[in-house]
Length: 149
Image 1 (cartoon, rainbow, N blue to C red):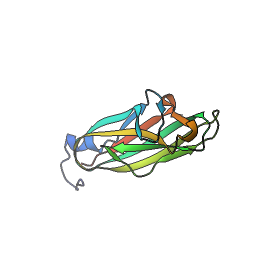
Image 2 (cartoon, rainbow, N blue to C red):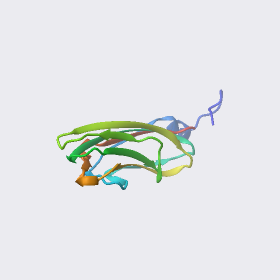
Image 3 (cartoon, one colour):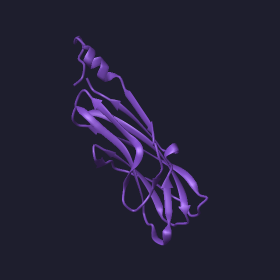
Image 4 (cartoon, rainbow, N blue to C red):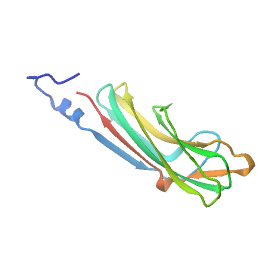
């Protein structure tokens, strides 16, 4: 709902106009498998005061090949238990390969109240003992929430 010319603006409306940033660094490494799993400590729970708040999320995922592989690793965002569209995808081959990949998401938080945004990861194959880990110290999630009056 827009603020109209001549309208009295309330403190609540002004508070919701302020973008609110959140950020977190993962708290531990994640040994990737073909089953998607939560990245330890890479979860943000926030509260919105009004329906239809907009979120903008940016994540950097750090991947490290543990055992030689031709598999790829993926990082994804889940919002209130549902996967957001678009994944970060990275590949390396030998156990000295290390790299980061990032992804950007945006969407609407339809209802007012508590919301959880979290990072998850997986890899395409573990055939032949292939192994990739996500390094927690270098994996980050930044979310900015914009509420409407």
